[in-house]
Length: 242
Image (cartoon, rainbow, N blue to C red; front, side):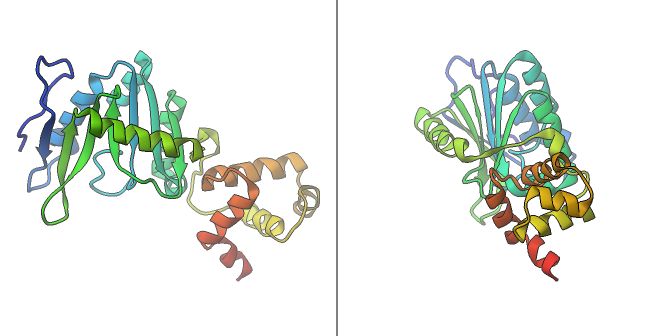
């Protein structure tokens, strides 16, 4: 049921808060009032859109869902910045969608943990998940309060520089490492140089560096050391040792 959602940010006297609730029975995403409301807010964007999702790709994530209006906005010159968890890089379907968004011109970055879930349009309107009394999400809340919008942007700008840019060309077609990637990771983790690893694998040093760059992009790592830490966290190194 839709209780209120302004169709434009240019309404004469916009409400400071409006709430959209989802229906109790399942409906197709294109028919859900929340999706329609969010699309209305995004369609009104003229300068910037910020999307940050701590639960990107999980069922019920209304904020992080990619929409056709996002691509339309990018073609119109609206600047997009999207912040999501590192784990999305290794999920083929999600990674493909993120790659297409990046190729369309959006700036996409990842962090191990994203601290909030929100959409901010033109630094003037914020869309946040609406938590019900029972703790479950019941739709979205839309704010035009400068203090709320400003706080979200301030936190976003604080973590954005530390996030790792997503390179669309290096995203995986499958969630698992290839045999060659596994062996390379094992060699480099054991202290082998690029030259020694290349000789062991029978490939060029350039190929070793390209493969390592792809692994780092998949993990959302800025350095090889960070890639090793993230690989260990995922259990990849333990599997290699076994």
